[in-house]
Length: 168
Image (cartoon, rainbow, N blue to C red):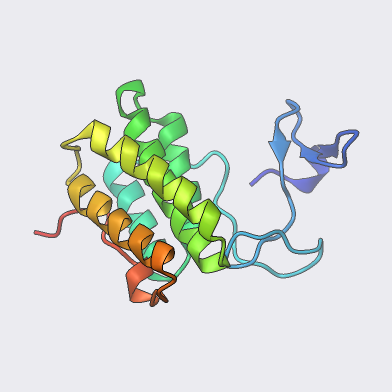
């Protein structure tokens, strides 16, 4: 992560890096919500993270399994931003799926619905994915989650820890 000394604030008080890109240097809780400066939060995922696809998926899965889908979203978003153009929609769908899980954790049904629906659209459109990504399973899980949200049914921690890849 970039050194705080290299960051500035714009007129709105948002953190900016040397190139003027928005950064939020504040620590975050396990749900990705900003905490006050000086608080101890969950370790952040570096903005410049660049891993091979299978390592990305393994890392994101570990974070999801640990109940940290916001951090998994950051890992998947890095792959979306640094990966091959042909795979951007796939990685974006995976990142949106993880954010959907985050919104469920936060109790934000509307945000969860929006992100899970977007994720399902991208994953369905992508079809058969590389790296053993379980697009069909994730789309099915999305449907289950959306139904539970619509019906106001509680979701367990296990419901929020789906597999990103097909297990062999």
